[in-house]
Image (cartoon, rainbow, N blue to C red; front, top):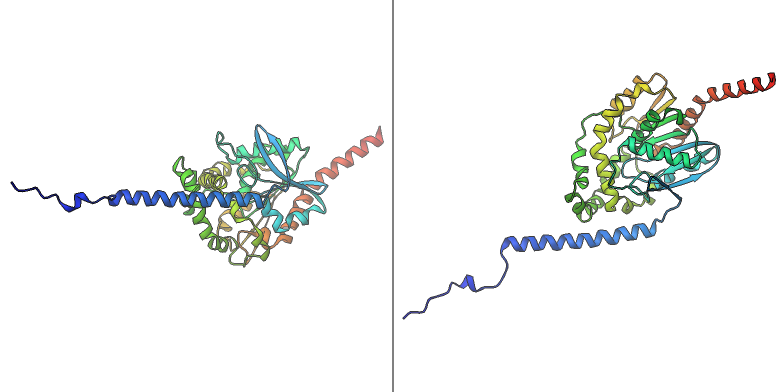
Amino acid sequence: MKNKTIPPSSNKPGLSGGKALLLGAGAALLVSALAVRYKTQQAEMENPPTGKFIDVDGVRLHYVERGRGQPVVLLHGNGSMTRDFELSGIVDLATDDYRVIVFDRPGYGHSERPRSTIWSPQAQAGLLQQALQKLGVERPIVVGHSWGTLVALAMALDYPSAVRSLVLLSGYYYPTARLDVPLLSAPAVPVAGDLLSHTVSPLIGRAMWPGILKQLFGPAQMPQHFEEFPVWMVLRPSQLRASAAESAMMIPAANMLSKRYKELKMPVVIRCGEDDRIVDAHAHSERLHRELPQSDFALTPGIGHMIHHLVPHQVMEAIDRAAKASQPARVISEHVHRATTHLN
């Protein structure tokens, strides 16, 4: 009787190509997750909170406060934090004449962003308005940069008596097409987004960082002081998710707010770089100026999106204009008060 021959291939130990590929991908994700966790912990250790905390509706907000006088509230853009305004020099310039409050908006820097809330501009405006009331801040000049302009506008529209005037820098105000939205929104997708933000997204973001800076500052060169900006604070999984969520809601948020711009009655100062590569200055800032007769508008040629870093003195001049534009009503009120007192 002849012995059956067993095929050599069935006797060899090993994994199929598909299983090996899956194991390799899993190992790569694990290594990425460990690297991201290490860089996140390192970033938070090297960049501790520099301001104070306030609890509003169960949300812990971090803010920096300096100076005295007429209050000025600074709201940073998408993916940023209080450090952005501090590095720009705006906080130092404004402190001489104003009481300056800079918030880490929900999910950025050291502020919380509970997932139970959809953090639209209106939701953030309501939270920040409550925070300002707790801090005893009355009728501030509200300054917003980029995505922060949507929050500033929501504050002015929903709480008009609580906002003295607006300064809007490099803002996105109307629902125009954005090719970058699908790409930047990925970390906000449930489950898959969490996996991405804890593994590959921060590493991809770090590799893309030099190109991102060219887009943000171009055509001008990035100022040397911005090298101190803590990039890995921006690339933490929690902040990437916040940034992705705001990218996803940017167009619908602008669509909703733009229907109400004509309700604005307070002074509005609009500033932007004419060569902004992130937001079309003519389609947004110039259009908003045409819609608001009381607005003060100026374009700066050769300047990109990060106007507060590139021409901080011009931004400071815009804040001064916003303060002066709202001054006559106060002067008249004081004059009437003095006259009444004299008659009595």
